[in-house]
Image (tube, rainbow, N blue to C red; front, top):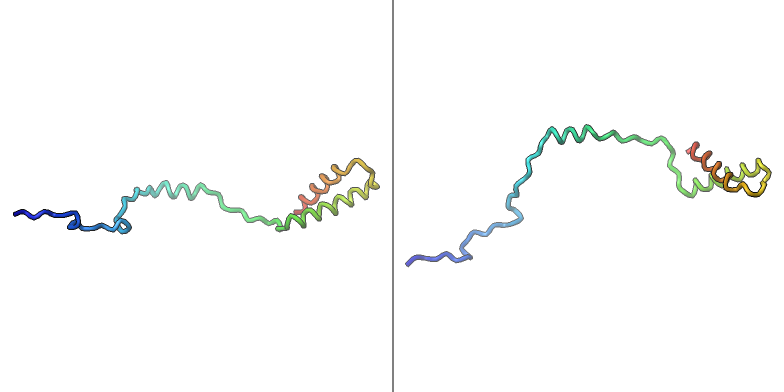
Amino acid sequence: MATRKSSSDKPKVDKKSAVKKKKPINKSVKKASKAAKPAKKRSTRPKISKLNRITMVQEAAYFIALNRNFEAGNELEDWLAAEKQVNKLI
């Protein structure tokens, strides 16, 4: 009589340890992509919070309005001019 192999007689393969096919790496392409990236520039500008920036703009707008004797109707222009001044400082 011939013996039949059952499905339990097959060697079990651990799927996690099975070797997967890896794609070939083209080293010349990898090196070129690294060279193409620009170097990170470090900012020399001081880091300030949004609250501090708004406070600086408020104070600058106040002094701009003071110089024009607080005439009504130019508040937006004062604020925008103050923002430009603060942005130049920051």
